Amino acid sequence: MSTPTATEPDRSTATHTSATRTSGDGASALALRARRIRRRAALVNDPVLRPLVVAMRRRAAELELESAVRAARWA
Image 1 (cartoon, rainbow, N blue to C red):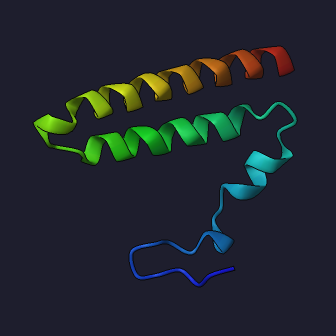
Image 2 (tube, rainbow, N blue to C red):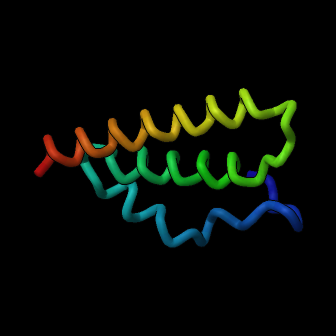
């Protein structure tokens, strides 16, 4: 395992890991991935990369929908 750099957070102490691993349906892990994608897409402010941002947002929406479906099935 590599050590985190100054720009990369230390994931070994992240608070969300236990929550995503205890969920049997994987919905919280999908929701987390969607939030990360949306956060990255929000950082892009280049018109040339606009199609990429649209695709990232679309993927985040797909993950959020799948997360909601899994959570509903698990409940």
